[in-house]
Image 1 (spheres, helix red, strand yellow):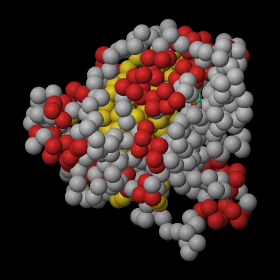
Image 2 (image 1 turned 90 degrees about the horizontal axis):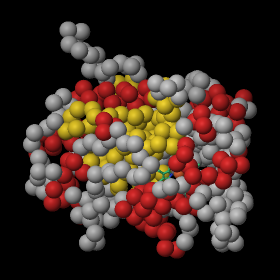
Image 3 (image 1 turned 135 degrees about the horizontal axis):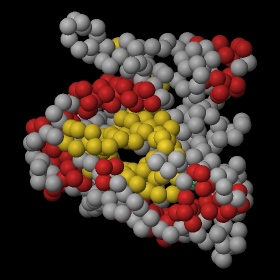
Image 4 (image 1 turned 180 degrees about the vertical axis):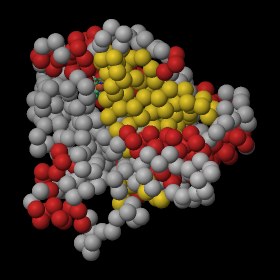
Length: 448
Ligand SMILES: C=CC1=C(C)c2cc3[nH]c(cc4nc(cc5[nH]c(cc1n2)c(C)c5CCC(=O)O)C(CCC(=O)O)=C4C)c(C)c3C=C
Ligand SMILES: [Fe+2]
């Protein structure tokens, strides 16, 4: 993470003491409780028991590290070359909402982009909203109370291929790899849960903060856009195994998910794999600093999975269930080694991780940055849970990234337990660099 990407605590709410240590944490150190705070934090957010374990940031350091505590005052800087919510460590909750744009012309689209920018800038930093004449609707839904905490919120604005049609004159500026998602062999895509002109990815410590931000944005954009679909998800707010403060959060199949993600600490790698470079001939210059976001709503047949032998589950993924270690040995963070196993006796040739990333020089550029959430939507008509993975990944090249990896996964044994039902492909706009800038400005300027 670059310096500007680092989080801060909302000055509106928090005063750090002279050591720069939040008073709450110092109090807990005095009690010898800091290492124990993990389980308590979620129960008493913002109170003395919401401890962070020593030396462990509340969000974890890697994108898919398990979140360990909720800090309502955590805020991510809004302005910068890139938007937040891509290489930002993933908090405990996330939600993707796709919209159809109702604005009829470019002026309307610009108003939409400007309004979204202003609301996201406010909501992600937090603050107090004014009280008004009770004859008028209140300025805020009020669901978070009079002081809106930043709560680790990020809102990421991305555009679908559909927006680059003739309505707004954007077609000549379409990002090179942006396309409408088409079905893969195992898909059962539901039209009402796919695509969209615009997608907003909300991530925060709590779903209430995501819902609050969504309702605020909808209230401020009347006549400009309409919700098409939404899917929220969570990851467990606890270490994947007791005492493991660096491990990846578990998915609803019980496996650690994110272990082999490229590190967000490696800025050069993020530039290579995640961020679009508009300086060459491949992409329009306006898109520099953006990224492609692939979203997939993937149902998991958890009842069937829970009746599958452990050895078979581990062979399907190519990793140990409890530790997350590759079947080739080591621990979660160790690189899977297929060099002595050309016939797949240790790690099956069709194991999920071996297909997804064969770890050959030729497939290095196909790596993607995954940032998924687990979802639970209720019960199907047949009494089975509608649970699964809100799969989200980012890449600098959608064809070399998600699409190629998914093609390699087609026909994998895991397909017996999963069914993709929705999602879409979107282009994450470059960041707004200062208060004069707005998200989407470079695109509108490029097509003026
Ligand atoms: C097309 C991309 C991918 C889809 C779709 C996908 C679905 C999916 N994955 C899991 C669970 C796990 N995936 C893991 C690793 C992994 N998955 C992908 C890609 C897709 N997964 C990649 C590129 C990798 C990394 C491979 C590597 O570099 O070694 C793992 C193992 C732990 C880890 O590295 O994260 C798990 C577990 C589910 C449940 C799922 C659909 C529901
Ligand atoms: Fe995967």
